Structures are given as structure tokens and as C-alpha cells.
Amino acid sequence: MGWRLRLVGAGLAAAAVAGGLPMVVDGTAPQSTSNAPLMVGINEAVSVPLRLMIKDRMSDATVDAHHKADAIETARLGARVVRMHSAGHPGLAYDQWLARGRSFDVTDRWLRIVQEQGIDVVMMISPWPGNQTAEHTKAYSLSDPDGYSAFVKAAVERYDGDGVDDMEGLRAGVVAWEVDNEPDLKNTLPPKGQAGFDPVNFCTPTQYADMLVKTAAWIRAADPDAVVLNGGFFRPMTGPGKTYMEAVFRQPGTVDAIDALNLHIYFHDPKDIDRFDAAVEAGRRYAPGKPVWITETSLSIEPGDAAAEVAQAEFMVQLIARALRLDVKAVFWHSLVDPPLSAAARRKGPGMTATSLLRTTESGQLEEKPAAVAFKRMVALLDGAKGPVEVNGTSVRLGDAWLAPDGRWSWQGPEATVERARDGAPQTPTRSGEVWRVSSDAAVIIRPSR
Image (cartoon, rainbow, N blue to C red; front, top):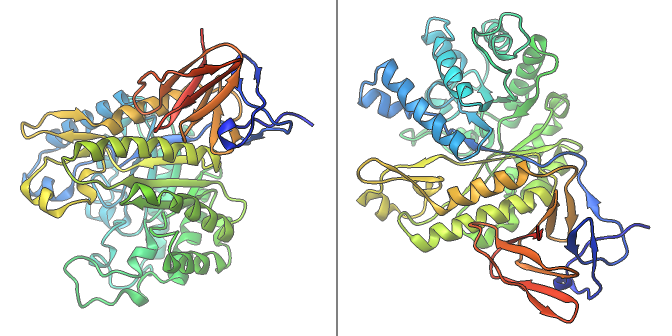
């Protein structure tokens, strides 16, 4: 039998050096994931809120300038992929397309700007905008299935990158197609401003499953090689979320309709990180055999709290380590830029106003939060990995580096370079006889000394 890598902190005392990388062994084979490291992106990184477009009466040129600025920042942070949400601008929903005179020009302009920065795209497609859907329709069923089908096929053909009827200037086909957004949320909460609306019969599991199966079939009619995702389930780790998800995948054809299972996992307390494992486990139970993507995740913090910002950065590292250990294939952080810190935001407390990688100062300038530094470092770590990911308890090996989220490592042999994972701060190992040890209160990266 081969060797299984393991931490002394997990209870071992034997150590060895293999491939130039310090490690601890216990005599069994290491676990390995089947594919390359996960894809890390940003959700809605390149977007302008519709309310601001309307309020400020933005011209096309102004909107494009905002998109370009976002795309440049996204590329600078190292993100290789973004998720386009149909609820924001530019959107790609059937009723939006009809309102634009059956034109794809708005989406074309956005996609050119994104691809100019070398960024790939996960595209959401749906009959209506992906959030607050009940503001656009009173019934979650297609009144014009032929028209919607034609729209889906035309959009996929335009953006699939096969050289046939592609958008002019398309540099690459979209990475994946996501069918609508958070169906379980539509089924449990009324839209804002519609307190009298009862969502219990809106976007039921049966209705969403029907929409998913039909849309997936029309996507593949235009591109047989397309990657199709379900609309991300909003609460996959809760009882109601699990019940909804199970009911969707009980419907005929739904598991086969998707190429990957799509989940959303939000956190308000870093101590709740085990919810990540619970959500992934639940999803795999109901859609067995499907790769798992997380297209929305973040940790909400108090706006303007410096200590909380550091905790958010550390949480990101812990999240990436878990995604690698659980063989999750994609993680999209929400989102790029926090809005300006207002008195109202301070009163509101933790929420979606402080989940991003960058903050906006009162003067309108963008500043990196500690989470941005952690994001860049995790992307670089993943980019440098060669071969499969090896799993060692809670720790993972990528290329010539180990990411130890519990901050502890021990080895026998030459000294290694140890740094705090979230910001690169050097960590000093200690030596006792032939054994080196590092113990930190934060995740660390261990590399062989050069």
C-alpha cells in the first residue's frame, strides 16, 4: 500500500520527506481528487444596478465605462470567470429580450468588455429576471413556450463559440448556462413590496423542474456540448431547502438535465463554516454523481469593522480549503465592490453591504479589503498547482505546496517556507531534534525552501 499524508497535529509522530515537500506519513495512500483544482470566480463582478441606471439616467457609454472599470478590477484580482445574473444589467431573460426589440446588443456589449480582459463567463438564462420574479409574472409557467424556446436557442447559438452564428468578436464560448436563480427562495418569500403575495404556489418544485428540463433541452439543441446548471438553491443546508431540492430532483429528467449541481451558501458567522459541508452533502444526496458548483457565497460582516474584515479574509481561505477537500469544482465569491459606507449601512449591520472584495471610499475610490488579498493569493495558489489535489485530513496539497487550514504542520527534514495563507506573513517553524513544527492561529501555506 502507498503512503497516506497526515499531520502530526492529527495524532502522528512519524515523518518523511517526499518530492522535496515536507510532510508527515502514516503508511496509507493519500486521497486525490479526480480533476484539476477548482475554478474561483466572482459573482456579478461586472454589473450596474438597474436602480442606479434609472436614477442617474445613465447613457450607454456611461454604463459601458462602469462595466470596463469593473472588468479591469476583476482581472487585476486574478479572477478568470464571472457570473452574469439576469436580475441585473445586462441580464439575459426572455422578457428583457422582448423589451429590447428581440435584440442581443446590450448583452453583446457587456460580453465584449468582459472578454477583452481575458475573463470567462457563466451566463444565467431564464424567462424572467432571476430575482423578484413575481414582479414580472403571476404564474411560474410559460405563456409562450415557442417564443421562449426560440430565444434560448438563439442566445446559446450566439454565445457558444462554435463559429456558427456567433456574436461578432466573440473570443470564447460561455463556460456554463445557469437556468434561473434561487427557485426555493421564490417559493418561500414574497417579492419586496408585495406583502399580500403568497409564494407557496409560485415556483413550486414541480414548476421549476419543468422549466429546468425544458430550458436545458433547448440549450443543448443549440449546443450539445453546453454545460447546464440548475438555478442555485438558496438554502441547501436547511430543512425547507433540502425538502425543496429533493422534490425538484424527484421530478422525471431533472437530474439528467444538469451537468453540475449549483448551490448558494451564505454565512453570517465564521463559526458556521460547517454549513458548507452540510450543504454539499445534501446536494450530493439528491443529485448523486453530479459535480458541485457554488455560484454564490460570502461572509457578511459589520460594515467598517477592521477586525471583521480580517476575519472575512481568513474565512475565504478556510472556505477554499474546504471546497478543495470536498472536491467542489467552482466557487464564486459575492461580490466585487462594497457600496460607500453610509450611516444607514452602519445602522443596518451585517448584510450584503459588506461582503465584497473591494470597498468604496467616501471619495469614490476603490480600496482592497483583506479579502481581496486573500482572494488573489488563493487564485495564485490554484494557478500554480500541477496534477491532482491531494487531501490530508483537513489539509490539501496543490503542486509543491500544502494549505493547512488549522495552522499546524510537522515534518522531518530540511527547513520549509511557511507563510500565513491570507496575507503571506512569514510564520517561523520551530525545531526539536529532526522534527520541524509550525503552529499558527490562522491557515498556513508550507512550501519547500528554495
